[in-house]
Image (cartoon, rainbow, N blue to C red; front, side, top):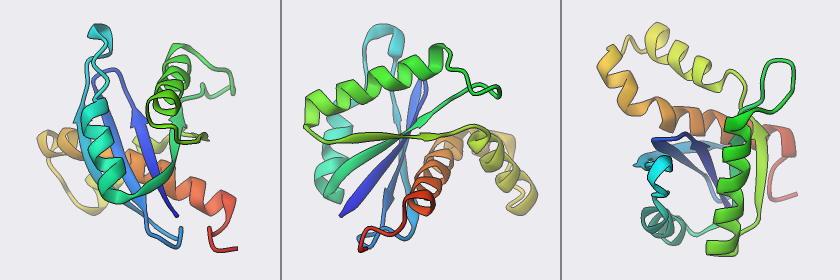
Length: 143
């Protein structure tokens, strides 16, 4: 069973997918959206779900450092409801605090990627971190 991981922002959705055994997460792509105009990238997301045969979705929940939830967490919860009603897939959440920071640090320190190129991949890598953290916390899917 493959799980899709999403890092939902107001302009992009980073996408990652688990391997069939639920051990690792791999980045897929970044979907351009426009939250203000009600464009959520659902057509492209439908293609990815079908192509990757995803059976559930994990969405990063951007909590504040004090564990409270703000407007971005509410937007993530609304996106989850949209995914559930549109695709009939179960959704879950993974605390995403510092995942973008982790992704940025990895790209700068380990890969020495330029600022321009980092902007093009950061959300996909953040989705990968979100999904990998979820897989690690919830055990392997084959248990």
